[in-house]
Image 1 (cartoon, helix red, strand yellow):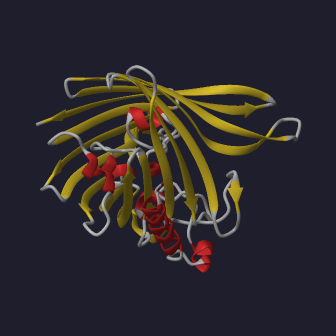
Image 2 (tube, helix red, strand yellow):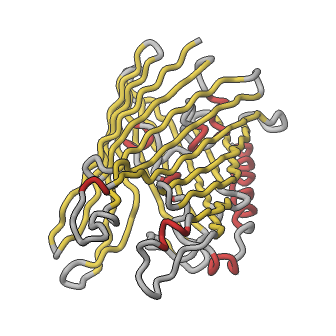
Length: 365
């Protein structure tokens, strides 16, 4: 057990060191929620467990959650596909990943993410120069964010069970013919497995991620109001985000198992509406549970996104986002479904917004 505690100290110490890479001065010069499409989450298993995966992911999705987990993959090759729709199908979220070991000490993976809204009507020229409506002047465009993650993981021989990994990511964001941006960044992860305990640390945008925006000013000038400011080319910076996770697998009577996990996600871009919040750091806790039978059928649940919401009466209440999921694994094929329910306050009444996520994975030799 002392060996386990020493390795836990290594992981925690790495997290504190990485946190120092985000100086407080930079927080006043960078936007919150930059590249937020990369923080929605991927995979039906993860989303059904409240996005607690920093210490758990061990298939192709580990390239997203923590690349160090690629070394725990149980098959020679693994592939995952996911599709989900948000806001009544307006927003499409698609994900694909593939991973494989290079040898007994290292593994690689690739992940692709797209989040977009398609067929948006541009009605600026709906009324022609004569004051008549001409529907033929309506054009359509898409707003979409893309990300490519190239992952590498390696075991560290000095400490048994200790693994490290990194992502090199390329980001492309497109707003039709109006604007687009290219971005580049690096993620780093650490995992440690000891008996039935699992520790993980994921540092997203560890070097900060830069998005260089290119604006098509001519598209704005034709319909700009007098005195309206025309957007200009700019650079957007994404500050580091740290996720520290711990999980434990428990053998239950019969062929049942229970896997419980807790993640603490810390953002460094200023004060947010989270359970633990300060000007320097905001921490959002997440918890998840997976009960399995014979490694065949799984039932999952989780809670995340704790926020303080002001009701119509002016009273502030803490709300959380619950999630449920089921999974089936058979002959290398994995089908995972998740239901995430978000409570929203409207005019003093609580309403529910549901999202259904389906992912398909296949591990083969």
